[in-house]
Length: 245
Image (tube, rainbow, N blue to C red; front, side):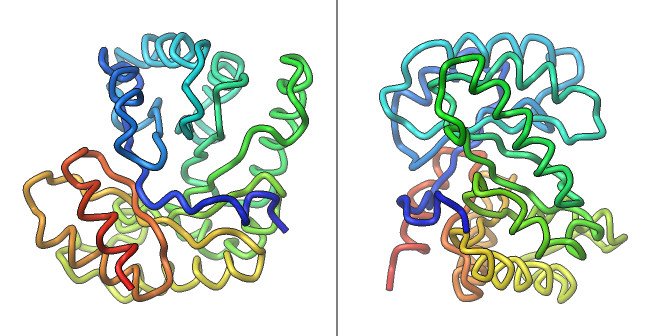
């Protein structure tokens, strides 16, 4: 069972591109329950190196107890070791690993984190993991993924990439039953493994509040208890929907 299950729920997680000049200022504001500094999809190829450097620099300082994750690249991208070397330390709460397809990926990440924690004088297990499921293979192996490491705090289902992996049409407010089935499986896998309830992925369009509300209400009804956000303006809406009885 995960050691993080009894910690507070992270209802709002604001994603900030790692190369953004004001990333540190956004974290300092403290408007979200947690922050995800992104090294992956929101960072253009020409800014990848700068994003890793800037994120490492930010995490070298005290974050005032704020919960700060970093979304690294998936295992097969060939960037993970360099990214982990740059970011693991006392101020890093956890790693958001995208496109997870097997328990072996989580086990390998757990082992690498233990090595880096020892090198930094941190207790083994200091660094949490959030696993994002975004492919059909990941959905099929979700039960094993959820039980792969005591570092796991929760799962996330990435609707956009999963939609593309399944060859589905772009999703409107109502998601395909195939996507909903993956979300339901995440709820069961999380509960069975003793994880916190899963997180919904971001809604990219800032002013499309009706779709944001509709999807958040739908996943709340399924058993999700939080949602990632790309826009700070979405945070109050997410908080309202996932905390209202």
